[in-house]
Image (cartoon, rainbow, N blue to C red; front, side, top):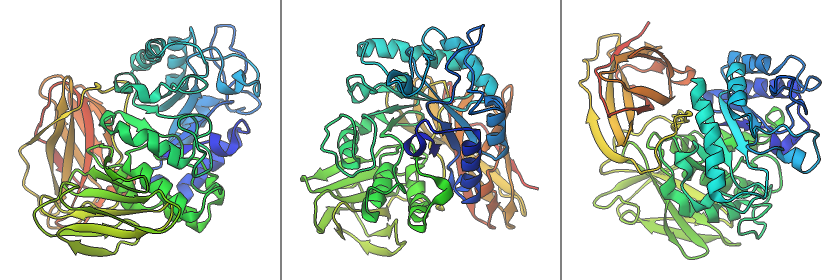
Length: 508
């Protein structure tokens, strides 16, 4: 989750703009909802490398330097994202709207070290060339993957194989190469451009490409349908709500592209919808699968970590219609379930039909709770595994729940329980429940020691520090306070064999 400069500003960026946007992300409350990555897109660099071949920031646009910008973002509790390409020219250079030829081709290790030195947390790596086979792309993208890993700094690796090139994004599962990968050509600020997968793509067009790719998504590797256009005009409020709801259901990166400094109330209502953020950032990291689609009425269902299912009733047509499914079709048979409307918080019950009257291009989303569900989590964000350069394998993780011994709640204190959610060859995903005792907790710290060589590759809903095999996780701003007897969760993906060590929890 975060914000990217390109959709609104293109090449018209500078240090003052990025810092101002960071301030707005914090002051608007978006940071505390999970919008953390501030990504500086194309045109940030000096058109020439220095005498040693090092890439540089443009001294007129970023006079304080890129490290200083990263420090500013980090001091705001945000993370620093940057743009580069695996070929010789960036997109702006390719189309002659920016001078130079400063791509990373032949400089992969050097540039990765430079990004790490600047404190970069996220790299958008964009194939701006019509040349190369898909195998050439895999090999070339892997060079930067390995270079980032070699720096030792966790850097989310986001690739786009589709710029100018034939659309290879949906042709394979790129989870062995990157943490997130673009499925289509660039998005534009319209509902439907009539494109199958060509420039520019509307919201409906992107959904058509990305929905069938659900099996590719999982912890640490996600389909990326591009940065959001919410708040930029070009669509009505219903369409912008659908845009956000569908991105949430598809476990897509939620990267805003509007001017945060001047958001109207309608835009804020959409971007700050805690119910949809929680669905998007659910710790299972699963993309919704298609339940039905008759060309007008489309139903998607997304399994959630506590046993709930999020269901989207999407009207692709031009007039209001009723969109329906059943509890059995979404995997909730055998009893009465509760439906919570993600937009209104209204609740209802059903033991069969799930239905709503949906306006043209609208999407109604219900969180379905009932048989098999645990208590619903709060709407606070729980960022899906946001990745590291140690990319998860492309094989689908298999569920293998296993809980560690839990410590008894301490009056006035807290306890922590680790549970393995998924595991795969060489890695696993766990969820940690932090439980308050008989008194409320205001801030918590969880510690454990790995038994045999495990290491965290990404962590969400907490802040991590490690020393050898010892791990310490402290709360984020939004989940530090826990009412007496209540709980919160954080999660992580890790390298090595699945392990559930005993965790201890302390609070001030």
